Length: 117
Image 1 (tube, rainbow, N blue to C red):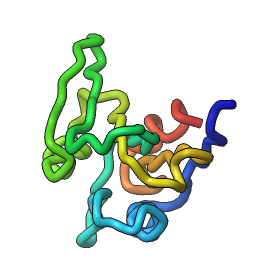
Image 2: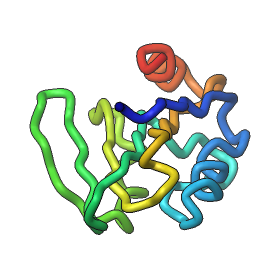
Image 3: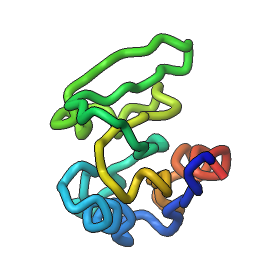
């Protein structure tokens, strides 16, 4: 059975990424500092083996592997459609967490959040 998908939706700077970090019990998602921090959709998924890399896909379909600690360098990119993060976390066996750009920051983030919905 596929994991139940939970989208974390809300205004920008409302604690969506902080909630993700609390649920995962580790600081993975970029937490805001007064400006919109996530411009792309970030999906947190289960992986049997802990992998310290995430996969992100550019709009042109190219796939890249990056270190999880470097996710903050890419979740603000506007040319990335989705970032997939694979973690060995028991919560993610049953639930896929989706961190979305917040509404109200700018038109591009509003559009990305609507597409993800």
